[in-house]
Image (cartoon, rainbow over all chains, first blue to last red; front, top):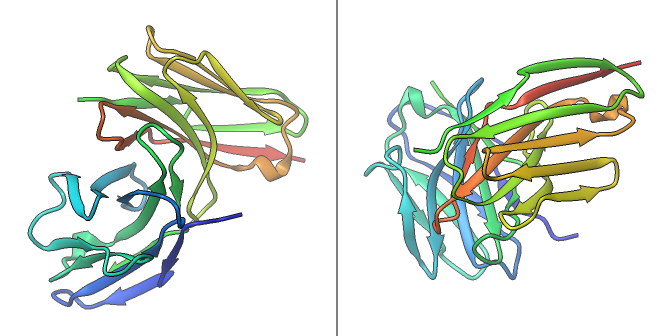
Length: 113
Length: 112
């Protein structure tokens, strides 16, 4: 069964460093989202991407964040200069059409020291 | 702004019991509602999706109902098993952006 994959599973970085989190969505899906979950808190929306552009972003998604779909399969989230408060589990999700079931990857645990 | 609440926050039941998890949302103009399961330190596994026009969905031992007008959904788990132990998350989509708004979850433990 097709699934969303994410790499790495765990990333440890120093404050101020750049990180890139990678996702491979399900192949025929058209919508690609990033969510994050700070330990003990709710899963929260970061950004949505459709037709090669951002369709919506949350207030969390500031200038330090960017997303890209560099080829036909990968979907990346870049944090330019990480902060301690960026430590969280980051989930990629993909789906076929508005209102359809969203499928999540296993997540990348980002730890900023 | 949509707010999603799940009650109870934690639940422990003996194996074999039937149980109900509750989810409520403040804005009834939802597009759909999705239930997920999350194991500790892991990703989200989709369990059921209910469109706003539907009243319920079933998958195996799981049955989810939706009462849009009252802003409520329930997830019914029949004949619980220790393997059902996990956190169950409810999430709704409001508007056309398709972003999910999540509840804080119900942590379920099924004991032998």
